[in-house]
Image 1: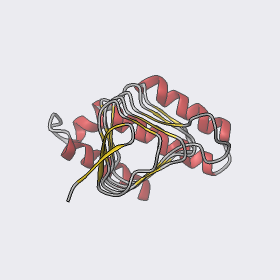
Image 2: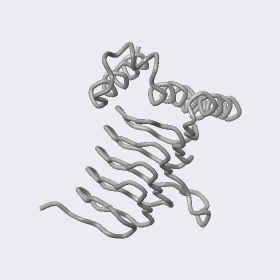
Image 3: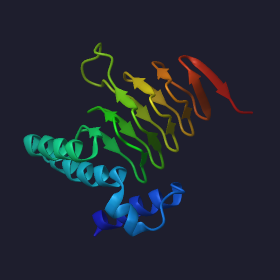
Image 4: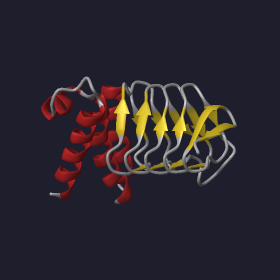
Amino acid sequence: MKFLKEIYEDAKNIMEKDPASRNILEVIILYSGFHILLFHRLAHFLYKHKLLFLARLISQLGRFFTGIEIHPGATIGRKLFIDHGMGIVIGETATIGDNCTIYHNSTLGGTGKDKYKRHPDLGNNVMIGAGSKVLGPIKLGNNVKIGANATVLTDIPDNATVVKCNKIITKS
């Protein structure tokens, strides 16, 4: 029952955030960002229960159907909105807080330099702009906005907006 409640919450969130959506049924049937959440929630459950091959299989099926690649080990909070998701990659040790938005062609990936914790942690209410690359075991605080095509390699504090690599604009 909890699973169905979470899925409904995801669909409702997408409907509320996307001005092009008309109703929840449309989101459930047509939105790849919603579909990949279904695949990921199942794959993550299997991953946590050490059914690693089956988890990766479900993950790859989701990638095939949606163009969005989320490793089954990634931890995703409530109400993630993936808009125009084609080309999104989310690595195994990435964590995503609640109420985040990720736009197409973005990567939450590694740099190839780290062994265990390799991918970023996103706080709550984070927005990742189209084409952005957030790389390495870094932390993005709550309410952070990453502009389109930014490359982020360092921690970003709460309430900051990143428009270029290592350039932070804070709101007062």
